[in-house]
Image (cartoon, rainbow, N blue to C red):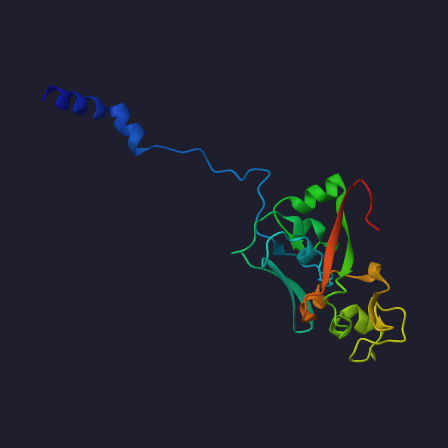
Length: 201
C-alpha cells in the first residue's frame, strides 16, 4: 500500500499535473529537402513527355490531352515524390516544394536523348511502329500503312524489306512505337545527362 501512496503523491504534484495537462510539442517544420507531390503551374504543357520519360515509378505520371490542351496527371498512389519530373520539364509546367527555385539558383537541368533499338529477329516489318509514331505523322502524313515512305525526314520507316532508323535524334521518347509493335521488337531507351551551370540547348 505504501508504494501506491507514493505513486499517488508523486504524480499528483502540481508541477507534474501542469506539465501533463499543458504539454507542448515542438512545431512541425517542413525540412528543406522535403518534396511535395508535383502540382501544375500556370505554364502551358508542350507534351514533350520529358516528365514521363524520366519518372522512375511506373504509372505515376501521364500526359493527357483534354479540350485541346495538354497537361501532366500525377497518380499519387504511384508517385515517389522524387521530383525528377519537375526538374526534367524544360517549361516549368510542374512544381514541387523548393525544387524550381533551387534549380534556378544552381542552374541545373537535364538533357535527354533517346536510342531506338530494333530486334530484327522479332521484327516482321509490319510498319505499325512507323505509322503510329507522332513525329513520323508530322513529317509524312501520307505514310503508307506498311510504314513505307519516300520521305527521308521521318524517324524510321520500312525500306528495302527492313526496318530502318534514319533520324534517331528526332525521337521524343513517347514510346508509342513500343505499344504498337505486336512482337515487342522495338525499344526506346532514355539517355540522360545532368547539367549544372550550362544552359540546356
